[in-house]
Length: 68
Image 1 (cartoon, rainbow, N blue to C red):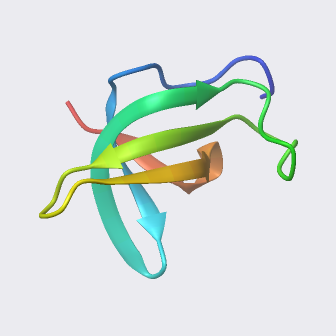
Image 2 (image 1 turned 30 degrees about the vertical axis):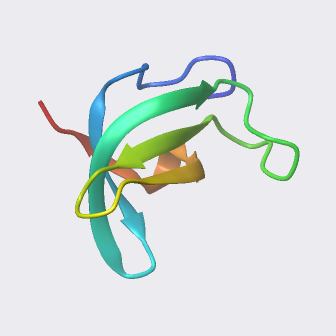
C-alpha cells in the first residue's frame, strides 16, 4: 500500500531478480513508489554477495521475505 511500506531501512530481505533470489539489506525506502512505478512502495537493496551491488527500485511485491 502506498505510503505504508512493509519493510524499513536496514531490514534484511530476499527478493526475486531475473529468475534468481538475492538477499540484502534495505538501503532506501521509496514509500510512494518511483516516477515509473507508482502502484506500490519500492526499495533500494544492497546485496553484498561477492561484489557489493545496490539494486534500485525493487517493487514491494518482488520481496519474498524479511530475513532475520
